[in-house]
Length: 191
Image (cartoon, rainbow, N blue to C red; front, side, top):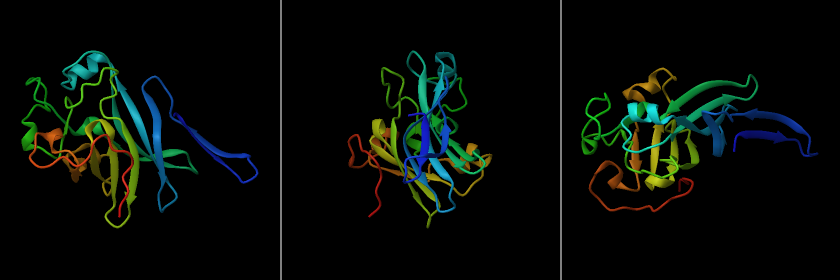
């Protein structure tokens, strides 16, 4: 993780981009969009103190998912979506994202997976649907697919407009009803 590199057929490096710092790490998957930009998965680290302020019911730092769209020519991030902006939790009532998880399937239950190493979600695959302008994200530790809207700019993705458009695979992640379809899925593929 951490690097994207493009090589020509002769093996020469043509282009590279890095997201590899104390607080962010590019990981698992990327997808080239129809406009030539590149969609990338990034782990975003939150210290134990910041995690508590999000309503985390555990100890230590946590790693949440973030999507970035990168323009490979300018190497600028032109769009982003952060799971941290779309959380719900029923642990700490003093925090603004407190609520009844089952009443908000469009939100992500921060405390669904209390993984010991802090990697709570572990997204591992992307698929961009150009007809619907949404991104399907495979989330391994939630055993489901999140459908993230892509039609809003980065400012609006931080609001309820950026909440999950849909999700499927494991209704227990939002205390919902229905049959569980997935168990630690990898990469969404549309048929």
